[in-house]
Length: 251
Image (cartoon, rainbow, N blue to C red; front, top):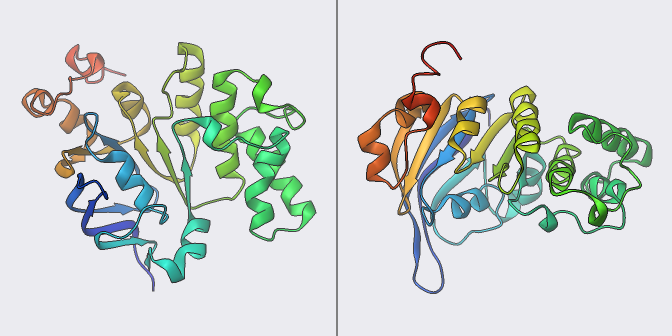
């Protein structure tokens, strides 16, 4: 099945076992090559939505398609080769003795031959500016380096779609800027769940505003973030660069 959509979600609903309704009739399409920011207040359902994209969470109602393939049990291997998720906490993805082992883990499990694995690891580490870190232990790296190493563990699998959960959280300004530059330079379809609205503006052109499990706005990111009544109505603030006119007057 061919499709122009990288991601297509139709009427997705999900309730946790404790009765918490996390997603309520979520529907949206994402085109190939688009970089979309997923924003919303705490508890909006952003992480729950992200985890549906490669089947980590399932069992609700509705449908999720990745490049034309439905996310379901029989398609999980194919879907997970197309969608790479970078979690908020890098410790969730860094568990091997060395950085090389962490970044090689995915390609090895895909059945890639040793030479190909080494090439993928080298390229992924170069992409995140960690070339030469192969024998380092993640435990001895800075938090910013860990964030980039976690991204490398996904890039080594060469997914068509990269999904990131709060990529700039807990980073100092220099490391945050590095992450923004990396994400801006990546030529991949990207969905970024973030509270960092300036990062969203630097990296993405489109946005989805989620609140209480429902999409309340979708479209051009500048339009969404510049709508003060919309933002404040959902416990968010217009970013300073938008409020000051910096974006409009010549970023």
